[in-house]
Image 1 (cartoon, rainbow, N blue to C red):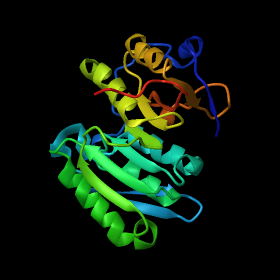
Image 2 (image 1 turned 90 degrees about the vertical axis):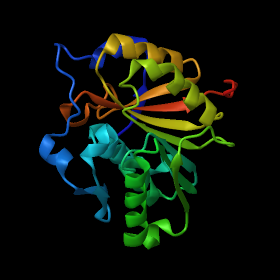
Image 3 (image 1 turned 30 degrees about the horizontal axis):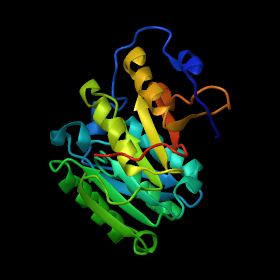
Length: 242
């Protein structure tokens, strides 16, 4: 499935035609399961066992944005191969660990301290269950801090749900990328008019493409108003100063 160029003019093509109540797209039964299995690579039936913990809040469950990233990576492994990969707000770590199947140089899973024990459990389980996949790379789990070097690929799953942090989120993307770096961003559409402004700001520093099933419109994952964007850092865009 291709990525197609995004412009403000295309925004209306995937705005819901009628008001809907925002959801996280995963029902209570799925969210409350202590362990789930996710398909990673259909070519070899690879699967990951992921622990969940609803008591941690939204970070303790694999929601549809994370599932959409896993799917997109399986169809575009070239985004990962040979790169240092960072996930911001990794939660369960499922998206990063799925990326591990496609030959990254390293994986760095980051989130708030309260979530990281769960992330550690899933990372350790992946290393133990699939040593042939993960033993050849550096896998680290820690609280997010501004890195000393840029990453080739940054994963972001549902990082646009809180308007008060939009500015900090954009600045963080600037801080962790350099020319040619890519960001795979799965986005749950809630208030399109507000969220469009974030993408307009990002488009000044990144080329913005939309994951598509037909090379025309964005793929709506599980019909849940979840879309996947690919951002590529423009040449000459200033590096962050934070």
